Every structure is written in structure tokens, then in C-alpha cells.
Image (tube, rainbow, N blue to C red; front, side, top):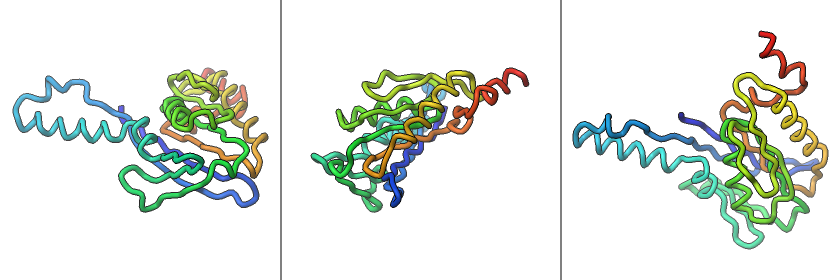
Length: 193
């Protein structure tokens, strides 16, 4: 499965602005032995696997975010041309919210990368990862269920708590819009269909 992830970083408040956007995919070849029937195919598979490896969600986040003391730099992997830098000590709290098939894996990696600086968060994905601070929800896709509603409510609750002194990481990956659910009735539409 190839899965795209989008990490959007906002500085909250009246002067809210985008700090950075990163993207990557998560994929791997499962039938390499069958496909690698000659030397040329073996070389081609090696190239493709190297490309997939370089764009795995954790690797994209780890290579895109640099932390030097209180200085946080965000840039696309392999290019610092569009780097955005903030000082974490300019913020009271750091939160992570997100939705999508790989959002929980991305949140886990991001929380680990930021150390103890993350104060809370909520993400919904297909597989929950055990984060230290961020609550992860194993949601359903493409039809949302009650767990998707609970996760969405939690994300919205965090949105009401943040102030201009907070930094919010928003992780959005493939399937994110289908995993968010604004009401229990909306979640139950799939069952009625």
C-alpha cells in the first residue's frame, strides 16, 4: 500500500500561519523474490525499494524535523531550501492532532522526536500506536464508526483549548477526511447504507 502523509504545522492565534508542510509515503514490495527473475529486474527492485524506504512515514518525519535545543527546524526531506524555524520556548504548549490511515504512526514518530515537549493531542488512524502523551484512536475506513466520532470530538476539544501561545502539529494522511466524523448520526450512515 502506498500511503501519503501530510504534516501541517501551525502557529496558533490571531497571527496563525503555516510553518511547514511535509509529505511522504509508506510502501514496500512484498513479492520481491517472484519479481526478481533476472539481474536487471533485481537491480530495478533494489532501486524501487530504496525509494520506498526513503519515503516511509517515520523516516520522512525524522529527516524533516530538526531539534537543536529549543530551535525547531522544519523542511522537506533532502532539501533545506524552504526551511521554517521556530523557538519552542516561544510557546507554552505543543499539541499533536491528526487523522488518516498513517496518522497514528506519524504522531508516534513526531512525539518521540520532540521528546517531552508535547503536552497532549489526539489522532485517529487505522492502527493505534502507543504514544506517551498523544491519545491515539484505531478508527475505521472508509465508513466511520463510533470510535471515529470520539476521536473527532477529542480533536475538536483540543482545538478549543489552544491559544496563540501554543504550537499545533496537524497530521493529515490519506483517508483523513473519511475518518473524521462530526456526529454519531453521521458515523451511523454507513451502517444504514
